[in-house]
Length: 530
Image 1 (cartoon, rainbow, N blue to C red):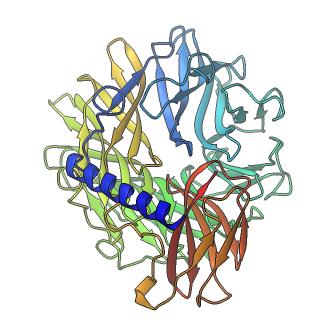
Image 2: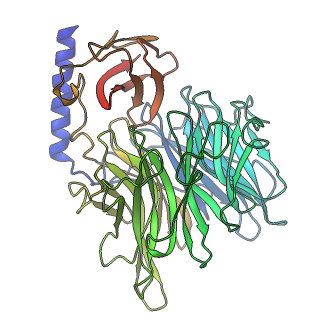
Image 3: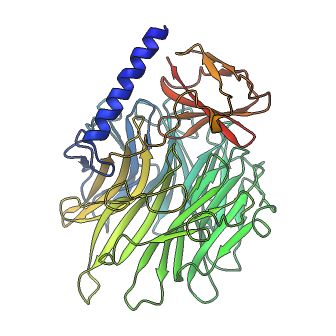
């Protein structure tokens, strides 16, 4: 067994070294689609991608909406596509790799965010929009792993809730108990709502299933959210300041659906001076140490031509600014002086702590404000500086067929490449686009049997590979520690306290990282689930 592990280790190291020599971090991965890019036309005229999810087996789910007919008379349907790890459509999913469906008879049906569950099913949230009365309704749906509505969820696979006022969900998180929390707005205010695992609104949460947060009697909207290990949820978006400019707004909500008064000031944080003009928070990502990253973009109001810069703020657990990050807690950057606007729409954290952002890059080309829009990925170190080993000075910018492109979503693959979901606009319509980039995530990555700070402590796991039960021998670390299991996309799939055994039966087959966190130190190992 030891000989087998040694041979496997040598092979993995050799493969990793070979990849590092041949694949520049930030370059498109030529083994994905055509030169690193996959384009998919669904119904043709208006196919818009909203979220990318990666399965443990490396298959990729893209979701959004597709317009059937014309903008004036057609219907927008929810749309899901599954790709094999090489970029080809997975024909075992939906119809030849694509699932498109109506969930209502109104004009608009949209899938905005989603997650892949441990059993391979797909949970997604969004909304329906009735243009006849100008009202939107919350939508939550579940698909089977082969790409059909799951009849055991909601009614025929989905739930639509019609409240007194318009309600819209753009983001979602999953609780450890399988309940689903969505975030967006209700009656022009921050809103989260919770559903049970069967798709029914959970009225024990907040007030009758919803938490609504008013912001100084102005319009506010959630566009980013993430969940902490303790079940509290951090949400971010924007609100309209009395001066007419939109500003960042952040809140933390307890597992009971009530505002967490211990966060910021009475549960809320307002940033009114990032760029001076309109500022929008679009993404939240929580680090393994509990610190909170909030990303978005900000308007440089003192510059004559409209200019937006990407912006990332890091907060401590209590909502105070972590001034060790970037410049006094803030990272703010445009890709170059030639690019007028850098919009940030998604953040992910790599296993080595580096940060990756999905960006859309606008360049004004004439006095009539015509633009060229390209997409890309920005890499930032865990300290809040550009990761210059990625792309060109921290940026990887791409153009799809010479059209205008908007990036919206990022995710890591099991082999730690990064996929970017985007929409490409041309004269004939728009289509789903998925790009895959090489990364430098392995650099500085914690290796198996890590001895944090060389303190002589480590831990073992066995049997490895495992099927159902994984044993932990914590070798002097002590009896008080937190166990985290992380899949190869960087997502935390399990958290338990002080465990000597872990039930892995619900995990999908594949490779996993297991971390023991004790006294501010992190010890790392790996295992294989068969």
